[in-house]
Length: 389
Image (cartoon, rainbow, N blue to C red; front, side, top):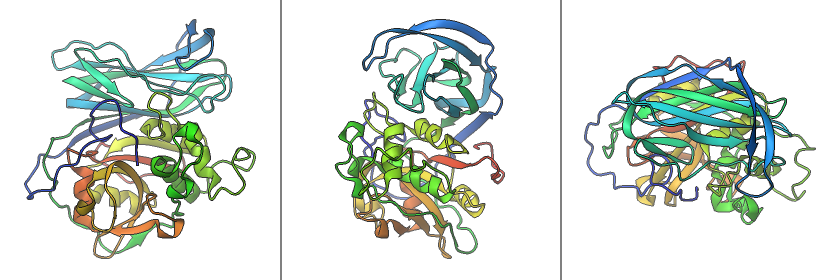
């Protein structure tokens, strides 16, 4: 489960609305662009005062700024994501600037300050950036006026940081409407993704939000990394109590933690963490379970975000204002097989959820609007998409 954010936002923390009668809704509009060549062209030196402690220090930097990227429709949200190397002695800052439907340019919004570890800066998002054009809700730019284009800027501080991939998901999600059911796929499929419960970590490391209820994101990312045969080695896990049921989850929580958000649920921070272990990844929105099924049938598990009241998702046994789980397969009848870390033990993590209720609580405009994290090795290709990966 995820800690409430400072701002109401699609896909972060919401109060779910009752499912109500089915009614047709306009399709979500989603566009994703990824850069695989990020070469800084600007250099300089600047000071930095960490908002969470430490003295001001000077940092040499290099900077890359993208071309202005047309979206193709008026978008209401932008979410960047990246994979990069930022070891000890380095860190990076990610910023977005958009063009509104009036043709005006917004300011540069700070979308995150990120490093692999915590020796040099406190990894953090930046609240309090709101103005007449929009605001940043943890990891999402929420437009006050729809935007039609954007630029991405990444500044690398210190010597030795570099960017593997960078991407931006732009979307416009119709609010409030219940999602009509999509067609199921043909035949059962299930990926052999290990099952990790977040609940068995209750009380662990209160400095990183305390495990238990709060660690659905680290548990989900750790499951996906282990599925790919990746993740931290014994030396990296030496800080964890040897009796810990899954040290990789504690490690992910430590190195995904967002000090401003005070939690581990920052979407791009999760993708960036996984990128340390030979994977690429991104945050995007899917429009249907059929799209998710396409990925799963290609061997790629999908981390989904949803919110619901207990009766809305039969078999869950709980309510949540924001929660991540790993979609690992589908039954022959089209129902969803998910590794749900909210289970009380590893042995009860795998669940089968009815397709229609799951699709509704995940895709509806009052929920996450279909947000997913897709993490896979560089050499594993993805199936074709309709512009959202």
